[in-house]
Image (cartoon, rainbow, N blue to C red; front, side):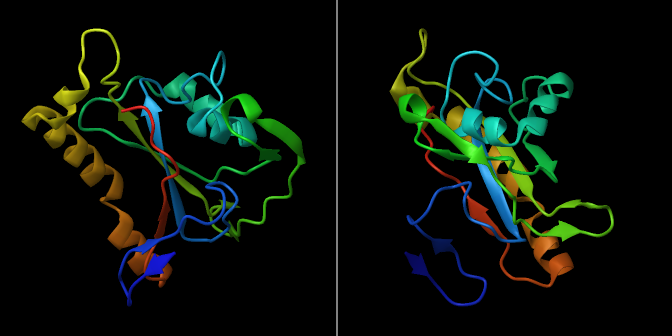
Amino acid sequence: EQSGGPGAAHASHVGLLFSRVHPHLRRMLRLLLLVGGGVLGRGCVQEEIRFLVSPELIISRLVCEMLDDNEALEINGSTRHTAHSGYASTFRCEGVLQDKTPSAADPPMRRSRLVALDAINFRSPGRHPRHQYNLWSIQRELNKAYVAFQGLGTLSALSGVDPVLLATGNWGCG
């Protein structure tokens, strides 16, 4: 675990991505093509697990098409309903969970934020892993990050808490 002074970044390898409770925690998912990934079919990794433990997130599949190269998605107010363990083939639902994420009064919803970026799979047919290092690919990823993180300073100012926390989990699709 590493941290710096006020306003500095904080990195931690302790705990599960979805088990941390903090009113100013913004969780980030790396999408593979469509929001929710394989949650309605095959797949049970970071993105699918998040959608399984907060099933109201699945509704975003109805209203969100594939993201453009300069877009990110933010979903606010989701609640975790299910405790879980494992990842991929070892994933197991462990029962009902009482979400302890604080709620806001106006509007009445959980103070949770989920930011999602889509990834390019450079191992797919027609692509090569070295292409992730060309100028277009690097600019695309920087633009995605800029769009996703654009509101962090505003959120810190509005909440009176510095910094807004960001949890990313494992990125394995790009």
